[in-house]
Image (cartoon, rainbow, N blue to C red; front, side):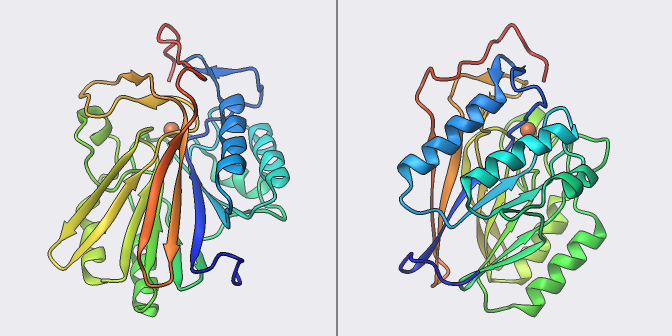
Length: 273
Ligand SMILES: [Fe+2]
């Protein structure tokens, strides 16, 4: 990507865990996922003066249908800002590859934004809810980090890379966290790790012996999970997204934005996640 009219940072909106159905009337835990997604997109347009790209970090669909990806593509095409998508445990990568790519929608593994590099990994284990970075993914990561030692780097994949303090969620996060962090430890240019899957806001510095990395998880554009609860529990917080500003000097600022309280209330009697 070339320079934008932003002075000195790249502005990124992360949307995650969209859980679309081919039938737009369908709900997840009482929330119409297409409607809440549209509301989040509208909010981004309304409150962010500039967005250079969208990052969609998995669970794009709930029913895994080609039609749900078509629906997503139509929305992203009319949003008309480059959108980079990666898969979550609910996704079907081969359907994503057939249905998603367009003028604005891309499936890529690496991306240069100004000084920064964004590396997009797959943590999906086919048929499983938890995440794992295969040896080939870790090797590819290390190869890239070796090749670009001077570029501040954001690594993103679906499953959280650190424990969130919630037993049931920690059980379905990235299973080989130690292997992943051992690589990050060797490459001081790793600045940010960005994930989804846990349907909640999480923002901590993860310290390894030789590195300190901002570790971020982002609310879903639909249903939220209650943080710090050891058992599965839906949260009443509204849908949201994350804004990130990547500065040329390697620094980063980020905030989570949510829709108005009460705009999309979960129906706790309709648990079917
Ligand atoms: Fe999800």
